Length: 461
Ligand code: 2HG
Ligand code: ZN
Image (cartoon, rainbow, N blue to C red):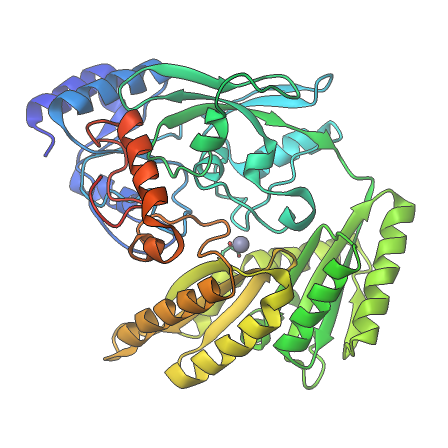
């Protein structure tokens, strides 16, 4: 519990206009894209790392939880105040500090919206590839906390591949800089990598040094329809085997196509069981050559139809609709569990076969879509909480799903993180010594356990 006295101290650190304590103001900060709900006791909008440092020192004295929060677009509950406490909303850290064209690096604050940063960088002909589906709302700091991936990860990698250095506040109050501002550097342990994907449990990241690359000269979007989901992912495996590296290689099963076809303005060929949305980029010649090779493979693999998006506007519409699949599937049922498992790309067909069998056995829609080029399939299990038994069935299905993924030598999460939703299952993937080591690391950073408690680990650290 945060006492009245402590709230007064917080108000004097932040200025009263940057502290929320009224119940109705707190509600939006108790939820995120999981739609789960908890209540914080207060919400702070700090303006400097020094203020955060003072808040964390106070939390160590008074023992209240502090939960860093970006845009609240997380899919695993990483920003939820599961034990109450103070939400640290990073909205005021919203400046792009520098885009250094000579050195291909940028310095940004953690609250900058991902798409805003991408646009700023592309204006000067540079490129920041990580593009989680939530780019229009997610923040770069949230992307770092979860190590967000996105549609272009198949060619360009994920958030961690573009972070050179960080400024962060430790749970004990020290303000540190990790990593470098240069193109490379290996001095000491790689704390930057440790903090990326640590889901706000080890430090509060306030600023990042990001690596940029030249903007590709041209890109081409294509779409291929197949009669079944397994034929579609087999095609993906062949594209990867053929050493073509598309910018994006996205898969939508029949259930998803039904949900988005109107938004996409799609005429779907008779008998379609799934589709691939493909993008290649590079200089004009390379993009043309790769597009042709992709087309040849899809045709040889029996695509029912292959289309190229003729104009950029057409392709933007397709990609926007793809980004909205996660929302569109709510047309089917009011509730869902979203998973983001990864399997080896050569084993996707086996996984899809399993999933179809699971969905029919559970008698619940299970939409499968996502980053097939990475073997990263989003499985959205849809249900209606109000219908007795459906939620329990959905939860039991998750357990079976994870067991299959581990048996296929996959991983439980490719980009959404563990948060609270996957914490009960983490022991399926990580061994006891690994978990104990992670627990010791957490203790070294946060001896009193005040920073984002209740995340990642299924037990108290
Ligand atoms: C996507 O790729 C996101 O659309 C969200 O990662 C996926 O809600 C989901 O499962
Ligand atoms: Zn995704």
